[in-house]
Image 1 (cartoon, rainbow, N blue to C red):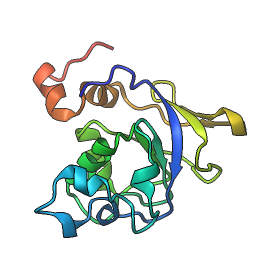
Image 2: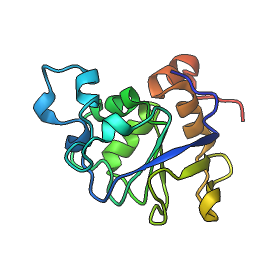
Image 3: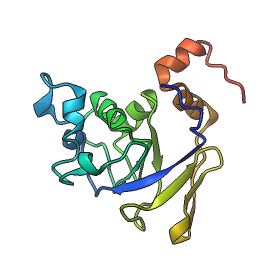
Length: 172
């Protein structure tokens, strides 16, 4: 689903720790056989019991180091979309997960998450490279996302982007 507001993403933070692998939120024990809604209702149970029940659509997951390690399954990103995740911020990501997220239209941003608490309201400015937590006085500089990546995210992922821009040309 295209998202015209990808340049500024704001929402409530839901905190997870380090080394959250894709089997924790998209467990292979449910695939095949269970639908995405069922799997999403059990997301992150192993590291944060009740996470899916308390998570509100439009929230931002703030994780520790190495979020998304372990698997290259695109279903992991689909489950996060099903939950309504607006973005994931973490100091580092599993590289396959990171690329799957971009290709499937999910914003992932590498930044320091150590000062965040569950419930903080944050804003991510992808165009200007800023991460803000007004209540904590956090103003962190980020490497701005390239216009091409923002365009892929804005269109909802790589396939919708290529359908609209088969020549890869975008307005700057």
